[in-house]
Image (cartoon, rainbow, N blue to C red):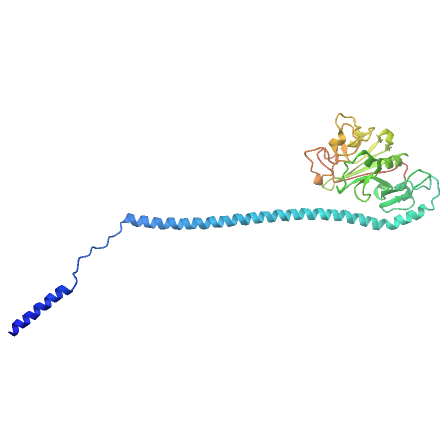
Length: 345
């Protein structure tokens, strides 16, 4: 009986375990990736990395391009500021030169004016030009006022005297050195004179005519942009009156410049932009942009356009002396000055 009870309990346990425990099903093993699939996955990762690098590089290039553009604009602005500053300094330098000249000669002018009040009306005592002043012991170059003289029939005139070159006594009738004064003027301006006596100026054809009524010598001094200088002198310089259109007469040439370029203009009358008196079909004053004794048209053009650093390759209207540097070079400085032929330092 006991054996039967144990057997029944044993079978009951077997059935309970069988029905309560979940069935265990066989699972499929995981699939392994083939070598081709592994290569494709690796390639995709590299493409993603390359795209990221390309995006980074594009961003860097954009930033560099913007920085380069900003730097270029900054450089252009700095260059413009430097050019503007250079022009302002040139203007100040010219102004300072004028003030210095005025200060250094103010006392001499006062002495001259005081002396003029006691001058007797004789040709020997008359203050005619800078040579007259030099002979009265005024030996400092600068601006002077020549007093009016009834005996000579001359009005008061401010002149600039060169009291040093080749014995001094020179009255300057033209100067070009700064380019601040345009010489493309009309007939009236050239007749009366224009510009600053301490800077660039033309003394005036009427005054030059009067000063050359006695035997007179002309000296032309020139300087190029490399600092080289030349000069030309002409004996028996005469400028006719307005009725003769301020005709130019020159005597013998001397000097150290390579060619007597002004001789080509001998015995020609004066022309301006509003009076075409040259010997050409062309209007030389309009073409050469000045007032001058144009023949047909020029071997010299001392009243032409002032070009800085001598650059005027496209035109023939610069300050030129064909025997020195040619027609396409504009000189840095020119002075024309006169004194009597019989002057003795």
